[in-house]
Amino acid sequence: MILSIILVLLIAGTLAFHFLSPWYFTPLASNWGAMDDTVSLTFIVTGFVFVCVNAFVVLCIIRYRARAGSRAAYEPENRKLEWWLVGLTTVGVSAMLAPGLFVWAKFVDPPQDAAVVEVFARQWNWMFRFPGEDGKLGTVDASHVGADNPFGMNPADPNGQDDVLIANPIVHLRLDQPVKFLLRSIDVLHNFTVPQFRAKMDMVPGMVSHVWLTPTRTGTFDLLCEELCGIGHFAMRGSVVVDQPQVFDEWLRNQPTFAQTRSNGGGDAVAGASLYAVCAACHGVQAEGNAAMHAPRLAGQGAWYLQRQLHHFKQGIRGAHEKDVHGKTMAPMALTLVDDNAVRNVSAYIAALPDVPAQVTVKASAHKARDLFVSTCGACHGPDGKGRESANAPDLAGMSDWYLVTQLQNFKQGIRGAHPQDMYGRQMALMAATLTDDRAIENMVAHINELR
Image (cartoon, rainbow, N blue to C red; front, top):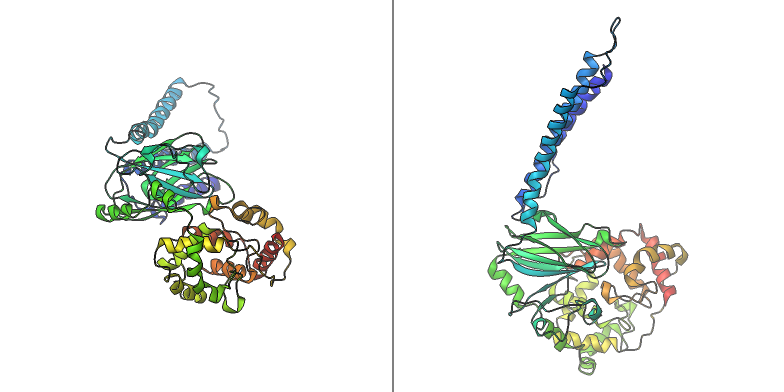
């Protein structure tokens, strides 16, 4: 009897948890409500079978319990019962699978008028490409992928010159317009998933998969990789922003084309010399840094990273947090760079300065952080700490160690990386959480000092 009571409580508890639980799907934001319907149908069928089977077990325990003078009857076959079981099982399985086949048929058949967006995935970030005014995407090839051509665009293809390139993990879509995503992976298996869209698809190196949907409400939605793609898998985040048509059109017009990115070049270091005069007051004539001014070393840092941080300061993405005192000091200084050319030029000048490591000020147990650096930080920043542009990871070796300690603390405390548009900052904040306390941070920085 105790077992039968336990089974009854199990049935009641399971049903109560299902119907009363606050955890369920995220609110739907696309045309794929049929996905929810098929899952709900699966719950109904499997839930019905679960209740019936356990109720039958309870019935058997009570009705056929051991009693004096009662003996069990042996019946090796019962064709009638077997046919009933086969029939009911067939009906149940068909009820679960058949609707899914109809949904899948629509899922793999995008509308003819669907807009096209290409998604590039790599460890551990997202990039996007839209066709230009000609409505055609240019050809790409992995052999063209490099620091100056992360999309692998074919420079000789005229159809690709006007392609719009989004070299960051934030993409915008037009409300109520069907869109077909062409999915490419540059390195390993990834998976394109936006939970509110109910649409996901694997991204396999060497092939192009696709998925389509129609956004049905405005908002910002998390883009996730749901394929275990390496040490930074959990931090591979992006954002999909669904806009009203006019807002989307304005955003798209402000994004660079492939031709524009090639014509921008790397900046003019000579022109950047005069612009750097303002920066030198804090960061030093040779960008060697000045701890008294809370100005880190800049020399040796990649121009691409300097440009991104200067843009973030100018746009309020960085240096806006109330506790980021020194970031707030930097933000108005960045505004003295009036346009993108000025940002590129001063970054080019700084990148051309002698790469002299900063003075060591942090003394800690470097050996305690060596393995953690190799297994986590080194995956993006490189085992030598020199950074990897392909992973959007800056140079750490030779950087002002006191500054590294401050920034790791800021990441852990949510002072930096909290802005919704600072996707790489958010990624770094997740990684910084692996450092349990200030001593662990100092040990990590001491190890980075050894890499210089």
